[in-house]
Length: 238
Image (cartoon, rainbow, N blue to C red):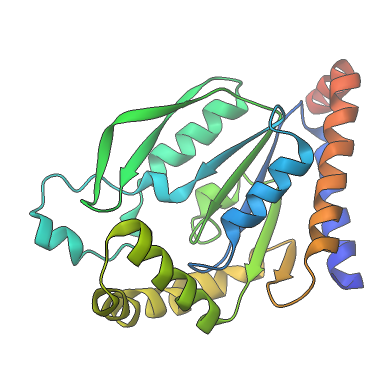
């Protein structure tokens, strides 16, 4: 992390002093960039009692009204593929210290499962997804914005491996989808949204410094808020 990134991120985190035991960290980046890995490293460092993870992919629209062949042809990398209204509502509920029922998506059949994941509010919410910086209603809720910048070839290989092993896809179908929707949507939405980031973490660089910096600041802020909740409440009312 260079000096400019540290200054921008420190400035961003300083705004958290007015929050009441709550902050939302957004982690954005292209498919296969390492967003979930970064989120999990932050959770492990800060402590699971203090953090919950919300994934934008869980909020894909339910396509049960479409035949399976049509679902497979859908553009899952466009803003319209997500139920962002539900996602925004859930983030606001967590901010209001209310629990949510997060959808669970079936990536093989492209529908939501009947069961949901129950999430209780915690001081820190991490939301990760490819298009969270491209949706203004989500962007406005984020206290910290992190972009994971990873070369296209690395991202494609990771996606190829994931879709084959975890989602039952063929090599041919993954490649076809990449050229049809993944790459053009990345260029149209994901890459331009990088300008909204408070900090950009290059995948090819040593990210440990950046991650340690993020985690340290979060722990410090959570600790201050837990020790002086009334003081933070008073600041929020001013």
